[in-house]
Amino acid sequence: MIDELYSARILRLAANLPHSGRLAAPEGTGERIAKLCGSKAIVDVTLDDAGRVGTFAQDIRACALGQAAGGVIGETVIGASVEEIAGARDALAAMLKAGGEGPEGRFEGLRALKQVADYPARHASTMVAVEATLDAVRQALARRGPDTRTSLAGAA
Image (cartoon, rainbow, N blue to C red):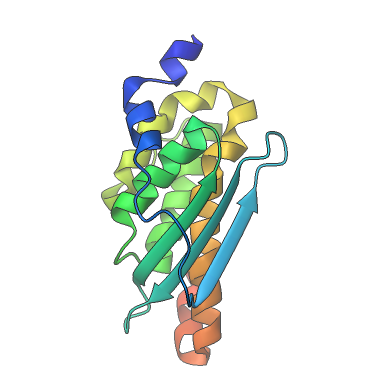
């Protein structure tokens, strides 16, 4: 059963972590740690003029599941809005905990982690990359001031 969890697709995603590292001058940084296993994600972002992710870097120290989620995020996050990232986070959580179908659109690749639903101890490590990304974007938007903070209301 554990072999199904660590499928070839998950291992490929985990091995390919786009945008690894840190940004020299991020507008926002998010950090999440899964307390049970210690998986950790640190994400830096800058935003474009529309408040969408312009540049992105991630430092993921996690199991293959957390790294696979980071792989999907890294492949698709450039150009994403805070609403899209919040929606992906919510859909991923629902997929893991409530039988949901998973994220749609740009973050649909996170559906590759659907079998993690059967392993509750792995849920937190699977979520760290998307949660850190959302935190980083929210921080960047907040630093930009009141004109962009209205975007936060729809993503709470």
